[in-house]
Length: 230
Length: 230
DNA sequence: AACAAAGTTCATGTATACAAAATGCAAATA
DNA sequence: TATTTGCATTTTGTATACATGAACTTTGTT
Image 1 (tube, rainbow over the protein chains, first blue to last red):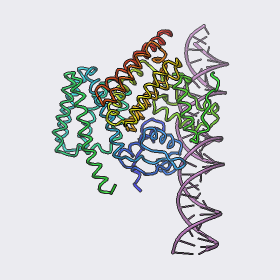
Image 2: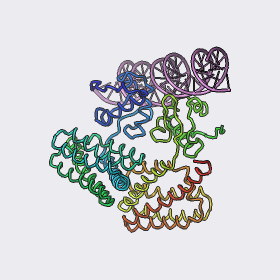
Image 3: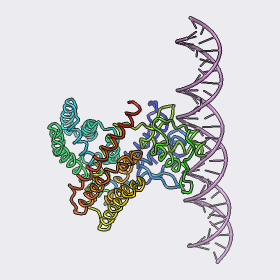
């Protein structure tokens, strides 16, 4: 079994259930807890040094988020990620990212446009750093600006949640150096469309961006599945 | 205080937490539990005849669904419904309903098209019944066919969740008899577009449908808010 | 050796107990 | 009368105890 390198953020002043929730979620999203792995309350409780109660409440939230599935009288296990489920997520995200881009055209502030421009430049710079983590962070920052510009809380929450489902694959489309130029160009197109308030172009650019991401990820998935049969 | 007319569905073979979750959710969505009302665990536990544990776990799920908000060390209360939050929900739903319509064009079966046709006719018949409940049910049935036709589980879940958020207002755009013809026409347009596999038209029809719904609901909200100041 | 049955162990589902924080009320003081 | 302080009550947050059902192991029989 893996060493308990989980380190709950106890410094935060949150109810234990939320600390546990965040800890488990991160563990699932990063792949430390693998799909199919059972989440046994007592084990988790011992490992995290709390009682079963906060563990259970955290699991209830993970259940609703779709990160774990409940088997009656057997408990929770980490949800499987199938090609189909990833496709489903990306299909929805494609529509919502397009919506974000359109709404951003209407609602982004001058300041927001500047931030976006800065984020594009920052991303381009990051690609040269060759550090996948840095690149990924720059990518997220850029998208966050657009999503936040919609001013739609519900939309922000949904898009973030969908993005999280793909967390494990966040490096796939970034590690491929040959695609960096393409990514920069896509970002530039999105930025330009929003700056010009061209909703149609912005939506199309956002969709294209997701489509390319999907291609990379699906390639990766097939590789993984191919190498271990089925 | 209201009489306990909550009647949990004990006949179902579900963990108590799920029974409680469904019960509370329905109570919130129907307005039995009003926005701002505190959800106190012991009271709910006594009222539903269970202990605090299932209540707490149900509240955790309601929290993630956004139906209740948590105030630290004070517990849960029913989330307020503001005009803004409804607009946010409808904005997202508009995009997802359009996506559903587009996907349905590609993926609906012959059988599905027939069902859809039947549901349109059924809705038209229902409007003549003048019973809002019957009409609402027919409306939901029709939309369910389209959403299910997408074959996208995640999308189904999200659209249903968003639709639920509007549950309290489901009668608003149906009670207005003068709009029945319009609704029938809108449904017909959606059906025809999907039958012809005309994605653009289907998406536009779905959006128009939501836009009109939004108009009705917003009128109603302003009425409500106007009558009690602010 | 293989299979079946029974008992034991283990994990979940639920209830309850205990501690700490927050709220409300009352009394005392200015 | 208004305000503040302190005590009592309420309610959440967390831990633990108990019961039921499931899975596994062991033992006995063929």
